Image (cartoon, rainbow, N blue to C red):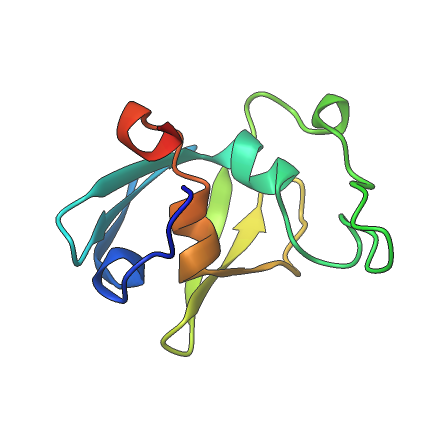
Length: 110
């Protein structure tokens, strides 16, 4: 997305695990985002997965199983989600703005 996201666009009104590997987030602006566990795990923002100095990915898609699942989903304050994955990783904090930016629907990619 080229323009800054509004507060409504980054405020979830509903967060629902649709299946062991799929998450749905309904946003305050009415948009719905579907996110899949392997993609989210691959975009983990923690220092174990992304080099803090260079921004280069340490964990690559080849390291992530296609059947990865959410074991646990926790709210972090009023600004983020934390996931525990079936590969036991659990240190990433995914801000709501970051989760919205990860939406891959046609509307968000234009």
